[in-house]
Length: 480
Figure 1: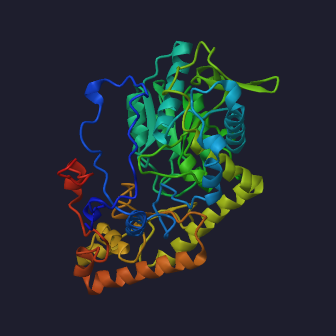
Figure 2: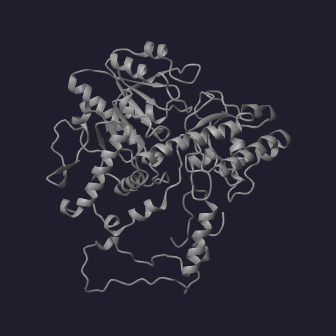
Figure 3: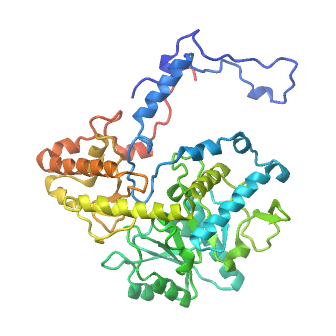
């Protein structure tokens, strides 16, 4: 596991100094909450601190180090200019309870981002409030429920294909709907006849990911959204894969009524780690009355947050959302411009198809000769050698790559879901393909090597079930 920062501590060698609060400085902290013992910080020098955390950063894999081909998650490089601008004191020092007069620039950032997302998506209105894509899904379904309630319609079912993201049925359940799943066609896309049979007057929303989880565009999309509308239902776009078609195809133009954006997937903001996220929602005009409050409003050159919307579903959470993420996304979109956004999606599709062509002979791709931004290969040919997809993924770690998504979607056995994104060059893709070719050879010639992988990572193969049920997230200290 390596040394902790506390194991390097030596008494009398701190690089810090605690300044006690002078007795004359008043405070209102109850006596019971005042510290009675030492603060417990490790006593280490500044170089030791720097080297300790640099060492940890090298042990961790991240997108700044190498390819992160996590299918469905779009782990693209985060340009550092985004971080620089988000760190400007005028932005980083904001507080959500400042007066509107103090934060006109921040409100303008939010208003402009809403406008740009509306243009990219073909939606009429956008709210930035949701703090994650899953919360965006929830909001979209809450808008649908409010819409049908307002019309006096009792619709209780959300329709999803069998390749849907797991958050879709979860969001539907939290919003008070039940989920009905329909089977995809033999080509991995929605079969219009099957969808038509699944539709009835109880369907409130059909949730669809376009391109779908197999990396395929729904070629019958206008017919699909059309028959849902004929039954009185709404069409929801899971925006997880917008990176494949931004600047080329607008969801609002092909029949979708509401959608969420994943700013981390599409617009290069930080992803994962439990930190701040953002999942804005776009909606057509007929859903506008139900959008959450407050909303950014501009009048006579001044921005404000307005709450007087009687049919609104209310607030999603305290304050407005994660402003630093909005700022990073706006910087990304503004720097690219309209043509740059279009080129980015084109490069994502090109990279995925190039990599798929390199791998298909060893790792068959059951659905689609051409993909969009990602593809789903299978490791099933290696099962006869006692090798599972998990073994292949673990072995990849030894070569400095993060593993692709495995065992999802369920419609592909032994699935390897790969998304290289547009930010990777040909050399990286070639190297990744060469490593997977070597692993395929090892699976046949030295299968035990894969079964015991990884060999060269800081932590060897874990008991993943136990790690999920009983995580150890901190090192116990006697002086804590």
